[in-house]
Length: 195
Image 1 (cartoon, rainbow, N blue to C red):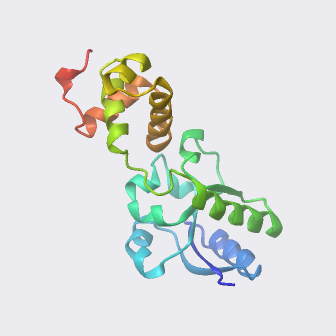
Image 2: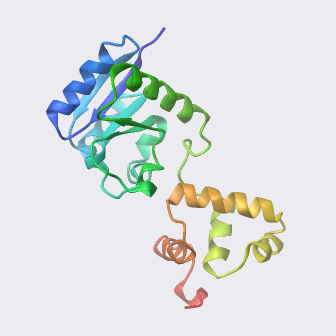
């Protein structure tokens, strides 16, 4: 059986080396990268080719990693929880490993994250599909689900499914936030929005 290739991005050398040692002893994982800087790791991603990326919670900040670093869409993404993180930020990960977990718990959570990544419909792409962009534009214009369904000639359940996907991919729940997202990504003009 092939060992799963793991990259660890954690600013604390002690924590990074400890995690590397812990999962390396399991025999299931091979640590192929350790470093503290996400940008440097992203530049080396194609060379390292990890199956799984463990990111320290302090390296996350408030960003959506797969949007900022599209390379990460090809790997399972796990946060190493060393600090309290915002719930919306945590949703982007396929798994969470706590700093207080023992070896068996860490290995089990890493395995589950890889399985989650393989079955997660969002892991293939965190970019919005064309239909999701259409729904987002109409949401930003202030239309209700029923109006969107009629305008796009789809069921209201499909509209709700697209909205759920949009929220998951962007991490934004409010209509106002989605409107700002649409404006910032040039999906609609400011004149199209009722302010």
